[in-house]
Image: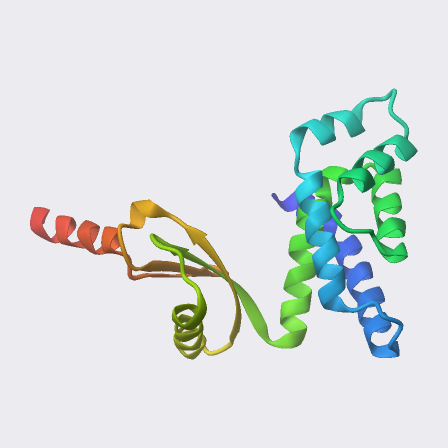
Length: 184
């Protein structure tokens, strides 16, 4: 949604600049740490019940902050608390997932890598995942941050999504190709 992207961009850029400055000055704030807490806040903020709670005119910003911070698994650093307060004060809780997405895009652009989602019929771990990662990095020509999701409907093989590129070597895709060839 373009409107969310437009709203999220200044937040993501400001947070990226602040995190980058903190990482270079050695103050302890770094891009990986910021990504971790931002992703967690984004997951929490995506909950429809929380958004309804935050949108209730009878609920204060402090109450919303307390609810979110009580759900977070780890203790939030001061920078995260300040960022969350700004987002809540500006009524932008629903935009947090998009802010996290744009922040990851900025981080990836700086490091020259991309996020990749690997859909697999079976769990991939250890050596198999490392071998797949090496093959995919060679195929796509850049370093990839892999995230594996199970999708039993693929039957076998994998489907990889890197940005707007898709590599589908699943049995399901091959069966579909065979079906199309036989029908035509």
